[in-house]
Image 1 (cartoon, one colour):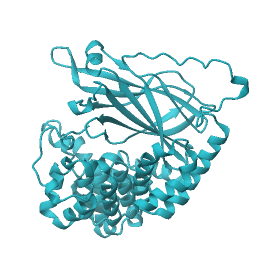
Image 2: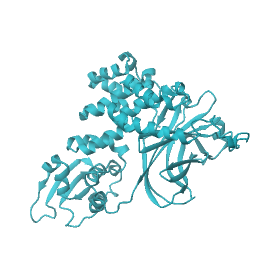
Image 3: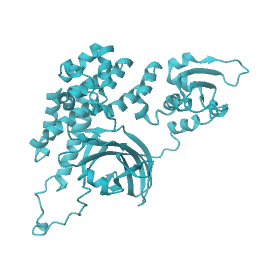
Image 4: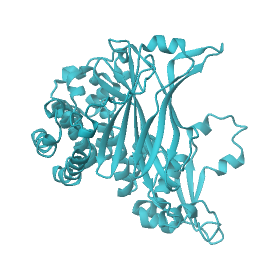
Length: 471
């Protein structure tokens, strides 16, 4: 697969870069990640759906733009001095931009913010803001910045570690108001192993309209350790932004069913789903668990939706007496309420709120209750957030749920990840050791993919390894 991927990159992109010899290794690595995470190892789909459209797009850009060839200067500009670049604060640093294209129709903006002399900078300032950067998608231009704020301790003094990293929308320009889903992800550069440590992907829906008002989109606490500081005492922070525009279809089937899901009238519901109590509710005092909160652990749904979406849940429906309020009852007390609610949200609307945080648990339920669409959605969410730090957990989950495509994609990631191959500490996490004990065959298969002996993966965890750090 490696040679085929490199060949496709050479054929479709080799003639489009003036410095292709220097960028080839990076392009091939990104292509392998894309093949595994987005196209599940299918070279034909990868070439037809990504390589061909992307190469045509780059050819058009190269034809009509001077950006890809800065040495070409029109005659009308010769002899003129170039405009001065905007002067940035030399202490804070600058924001760089890269683009990722997971699909031909979607663009991921990668913004890297390098903070100069990190320790001195945060010690002198109460807040730090990056330069403003812009993202343009389908005629909508949005302006953003990254900001750093600090927690305060009991004495009222700022806490230097961890940092609070915020993503802010500073303005928007558009011809007409529209709605878009924004996916974003923070990361911090590990200077020791030269790898981005990334947080889970977050989602938010925004109404995009002409405005210059500041809007905080999301934040994350990041712990900065010695390995994140490079030889120049700088720290680099990454944010990925993907803006997915959607037309507001107020009366499509998905949104109509979402509205029906929130209705409790007899004409809309005939089944009572008994759920378990959420963990946060268990921690409350007995006084707070009043009857009203107890009723919230039950869901009221329609049996037709259950029968249409899940044959296993349909079998579990229990008929009630004629004088009972509900025609059916469904016992899911072993599953907490919030998880059951998202399970039924998918059954009604094909969507899940907070899929990145729940994909592991929902994957198990999708297999148990035979809901293949939800299984595919969870597998895609897991692969979008796969890292050297969590690939062992994903392998264990895929094997437990018998998800062969997810297992193969995770093994492909192990095979193609230079970070895993070059750093034995990746095997020192608890997940690798659990895998070795409970599933030695999967452990050996992963070792073969990593092209590493099992001796590199069986030493106890050591403090300071990035596998112990959750950004």
